[in-house]
Structure formats: C-alpha cells, structure tokens
Image (cartoon, rainbow over the protein chains, first blue to last red):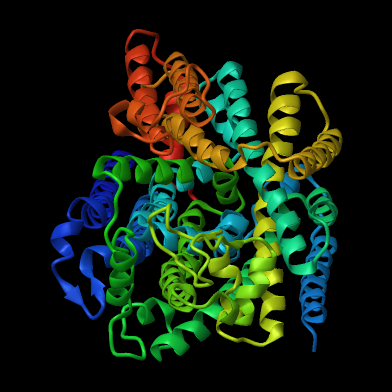
Amino acid sequence: MISKDKYWKINLKYLLILLSIWFLVSFGFGILFVDNLNQIKVKGFKLGFWFAQQGAIYVFVILIFVYVFLMNRLDKKFKQKN
Amino acid sequence: MDLQFWIWTAVGISFSIYIGIAIWSRASSTSEFYVAGTGVSPIANGMATAADWMSAASFISMAGLISFMGYDGSVYLMGWTGGYVLLALLLAPYLRKFGKFTVPDFIGDRYYSNIARAVAVFCALIVSFTYIAGQMRGVGVVFSRYLEVDINTGVYIGMAIVLFYAVLGGMKGITYTQVAQYCVLIFAYMLPAIFISFIMTGNLIPQIGFGLQGQDGVYLLDKLDGLHRELGFTEYTSGEKSTLDLLFMMSALMVGTAGLPHVIVRFFTVKKVSDARKSAGWALLFIAVLYTTAPAVAVFSRTNFIQTVNNKVHSNLPEWYEKWESTGLIKFDDKNKDGIVNYVSDSQLNELTVDADIMTLANPEIAQLPNWVIGIMAAGALAAALSTAAGLLLVISSSVSHDLIKRIINPSVSEKNELIAARISAFGAVLMAGYFGINPPGFVAATVALAFGLAAASFFPAIVLGIFYKRMNKEGVISGMIVGILLMLFYMTKFKFGWFGGGSESDWWFGISPEGFGTVAMMINFLISFIVSKFTKAPPANISKLVEEIRIPSQD
C-alpha cells in the first residue's frame, strides 16, 4: 500500500545508497585510496590493485542484481494497492 | 589438420549459423525492425547487449592495452563496466517505460521539440559513424591476419554478412545473431586464457590464477613488478598517470557507456520495465566474464613475453615469435649488433617494438594449443566485430528512417514505407561503413575516444535530467547539448588533430587528457541546462505528466 510519491522516494533512496557504493569501490578503492589499500596483500594481489582490476567489477554486477531485487519487491507493494 | 583448414571451418560454421538465424528471425513490422517486437527475454537481451558492446577492440586489443599500461589500464576496465550500473539504475527502466523506438524519440518527446530531436539525431549519427568505421576495419584486419586474404577483401566479406542479417532481420535478426555471437566470442576468449592460467599457475580460473605463484614459487605480480623495475618501466601494479586524470577518464568512460545510443536502444527490446533492469544485470555479468579475464591474460602474456624474448639470442627464439615477427607486429632492430634482444624502457637502448594486439593473438601459440583453438579464436574475433557493427548500423538506419523521415520530415508515411526506408538506410549505412573500413580515416583510434566523450557530453545529461528533473525544459536541454558537444569537439580536435592552434600535454586544461574531457563537457552541459532552464518557461503540464508516468511501473 504505497502511493506514487512514496514509490519514487523509496526508489531515490535505493539509488543514493547503491550509487554511493558504486562510487566508493571504483573512484574510492580503485583510484583515490589505492595506495593505502595496496599496503594490504591477499595472496599475490595488492588490495587496491585488485579492486581496480577485479573487485570493483564484481561489486558492479552485485549492485545491479540487488537493485533488481529491491525494485521487484517495491513494484509488488505498489501494485497491491492499485 | 592444417591451420587454414580449421580457421575456414570455424569461420564458415559460425557464419552459416548467423545467416540461418537471420532467415529464421526476419522482421515483418517496424516494431520488429527497430526493437525486435519488444519480445526478447532478459537473459537473451543481456547476451546480445554484451556482444553488441564488446567490439573487435575489446576482444583483440584490451588485454594488450592493459599489459602495457599496468595499473593505469584499470580505468578502462572499471569505466567500461561501471557504466552499466548507471544504465541499470538511472536510464534503462525509465526509457523502457517510455516505450518508443530510439533515443531521439525520447529526447524529442520529453522536450516537446523537433529541434531537440534533430540535435539528438545529429549526435547519434556522429557517435555511431565514428564507432562503426573502426569495426569494419577490425573485420578486415581479422580476416587478413587469420585467413591471409587482403584487408579490403575481408571488409567486403564482412559487409556482405552484416548487410544480409541487418537489412533482412533488423533488430530481431541482430538480437538473435548477437546471442550466438556472444557464445562464440566468449568461448574463444576463455579457452586459451584457461589453458595459459593452468600452465603458469596450476589454477584453471584466470581471475584467481594471476594472484598466485608461478612455477618458481614467486607470486606472478611480484615477479612482473620486478621485471618492470629491472627494465626501467613503471612498476606494473602502480601507475604513472595523475590521480585527477584517472578520475576524469574513468568517469567519462562510465558516463559515455551509459550514453551510447546503440547500447541504450537494446533496453527497448524487452517486454517490461522489470526486464530492462534484469537484462542490464545479465549484460554486465556476461561482459564481466571477459573484462575480469582480460587483466589476467595481460599479466600472463606480459610475463611470458618478457621472459621469452628479453636478453635472448634472436635466432634462438621460439617459432611463434618468428611467425608474428613476419606479420610486422613485432619488430626487432639490433642496435648494438650483438644478436641479443634488449627490451627496455629507454628508447635509445630498446631494440623491440611490440604491437599490443599480439598479447591476445599469440596466446594459443605461446600456450602451444592445437590448431582448432586458433580457428575458434578467429571466429570469436569476427563475432565481436560483426555484432558491434550490426548494432551500430541499426542505430544509424533507425535515426534516418524513424527519427528523421517519420518524426520530422513526413509523419504521414505508412508503416510499410517506413520499413522500406529503414532497410534502404541500413543498406546505405553498410556501404558507408565499408567505405570507411577500406579507406580508414587516419584518426580512427582517436575518434573512438571522441565517441565516448560525445555521448557523455550530449545524451547522458539530457536523458537523466529528462527523468529526474521535471522542471527541465527544451531551452535548457538544447543549449546544454549543443554547448557540451561543441566544447568536446573543440577540445578533442585541438589536442588530437592539432586544430585551433593545437597544443601538447602541458597545455591540457587542469592536466585533463582529451579522453577525460568528456567529464568536464558533461558537467558544463548540466550547468548550462540548469541555468538556462531557470530563466525560461517551465515545460507544459502534459510533459510533467509524461515524466510522472515513466517513473512508475505499468499496471500489467
């Protein structure tokens, strides 16, 4: 039972959260904090380098599927009322 | 069996499949021609998008590019994948809800103006033509490298194939051919990568393998960093570009990806809004398979390459080296006449010039894989080039037949005639693309970056504002798009082609490269749109309603 306005506001909240994570793993971990993260090593990977060439991409895929899940749930709530 | 036999077999079989699919799925209405009748399943659309997106350059040049750039190459990996998050979250679902055929459709309707529509058509045509010239050239290069035919003959064969299924099948034919092409190209890419990973690290998964130890117990990445230091290159895992430029380049690639019309239009082909979101997820997953393998291949082949050639006697080098030397992709100039290859950073002492493409192309031979693998590689590279070319052709033909003829010049044209116009313009676009493939403009490489910059500077702000900012009006968006594109064109032509007085790296504004400038042009587009819209009339009430409509899912 949610209105059009409520639906849009919740959508915007999801966007804000997911895009912040998107920004953090790519611009943040991959570029801005890469030197700090490179101090940590997992097997042969320096962590900053790993995020830039692997980790960020995995997170991108997960983000889209999380958004799909959240929006499908929201769509259901929205349609119940109508 | 001999190599040529396997290559012709693999290419022949894959081409017959494409033609078979084209006949089976030919389009009979404009809706089928432009958007495959909106009946494509999310997974199939995801695969088609992935094939559409990954061009000959992704398949052949990506790993080499990264192997030469090391950490700095990360901006391409993150930029070309991160754009899909923007697509899935900010554009695709709403454009699908809007539910027409093209990007100029949306911009023209949302901004209630045929001027806005015409500006969008202009941008779509420029972006797509710069892109497709490179693709047709790619088809020719692949043919000539693998099949030992003339590059131009290769372009003709490629044109004939694309012509057949794009003109006959439209989006429907293209979509299902691209699904097949994705399967061919990803198989061809992964197979040698898996073999090499196993040979070098004992692990079958390349993504894990390149973080493991080699046969000598040293971590591969540590070894490569060491080799780079020894030869005077920048350490592989750390870069030399400025942080600011990396940030701007990556954001231009991300936003450009999300703004490319041939990618956006793929999301018009699914049944409903939730499918548009889902298929963006599948698309990125399918793309990520190749994009996370490429950096692993880069590390394997770079290490392999340095160890095989540096400080070795030239006449004792393995057979694959000789073969690729004869194609001119590796050049050896024995400056000190000692017969030993010196591969170092210092250009005075370096004796070896290496084309980046070899990092992918020579892989099967370096790993000593059987000939049929090379045959599949050839089919894969062609699949990558053809699928991208076809997607771009469709954007060009629909821009002409739908946006220009149907929506601007002659709205009363019948569906049957519009379909004929669509096929004729697809035909014309193939001829033109072929012309550029045979007579490539010298600036193809530079203009691919231009395509991303242009898309970032024009489409992305116009579409995002159209969805998320109801108050945005036609005056704002038209001035934003025009200023954005012109600024981008100015900066690129100034620093890439030396127009307007040219300039070198030290003249870059704020140290931002032309590749990263799309971000600046995009910001200025946003800014101008806001300012102009503040001082001009709000859009009419029916537009506000349209925007509200596209924000919510339909009731079915």
